Amino acid sequence: MIEIKNLEFQYNKGTTAEINAISGIAAVIHKGEFVAVLGHNGCGKSTLAKLLNALLLPCEGEIFVDEMNTQDHEKVWDIRKKCGLVFQNPDNQLVATVIEEDTAFGPENLGVEPAEIRKRVDSALDAVGLGKERAKKSANLLSGGQKQRLAIAGIIVMHPEYIVLDEATSMLDPHGRKEVLDTVHRLNKEEGITIIHITHSMEEAAEADRIIVMEKGKIVMQGTPGEVFSEVEEIKKLRLDVPPMAELAHILRKKGLNLPEGILRMDQMVEALERMKTKRN
Image (cartoon, rainbow, N blue to C red; front, side, top):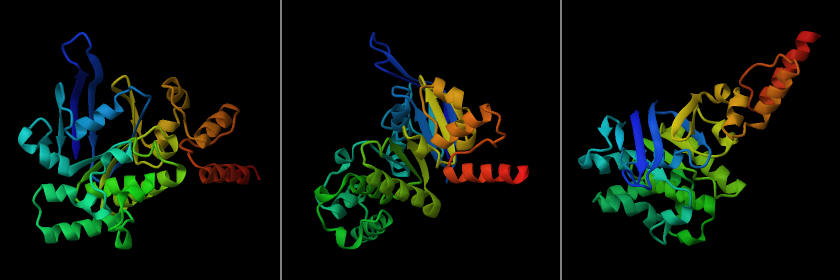
């Protein structure tokens, strides 16, 4: 698991330009979870992503990735193999012009045997739907969603336990967003890879196992999507939205309808209203 203990981080620490990005965060992310991290711009989400991957090191506190301290310089590469990071802009993450060459870049640099690289590349590209006849094509011809899937393949090939997506769907059109989300949900459910999905999308967060809400560098709420999005007024105070069905359920409760907590989707709303109708009859 990933353990975050009393985490503090400041940019430009000790200078007049010091910015406090993370303030006393403590959390545990268990293997196999799909965790969404929500928060307004500037709340510290992206800083947290870089700290999990050891691109940044804590000013105070500690992060352990499978009991490896991110501040242990001898463990940095092991941590990055365990915990991969996908960034916002897909074009900034590609290092080769051919799809399979880009995927092979990581293990090649670690000196993995060529036969093993071949197996890993084929498996990773199949996992993101870019294998077979596409593998030898130019990465420059891919759509945004396909490029993000290629970036994920470049992480899968390292056999990670965790994948952190730092707003990796925010620059994609709806089709590309769906491609990426379908891929990471499949990796989570079928491969058991832990996903930490940093996003502004309430609909994407609603599909997670657990949501962490950040504000001003702190964790201010966490729980299941049903628990978090039932706190409509609190979420709005944080300048965030809620899924449309959660807001509608909140409005109907205020008008006297006895709807259950945790409604997030249309089918849940229809089912709840049908049950109410049956009881009245």
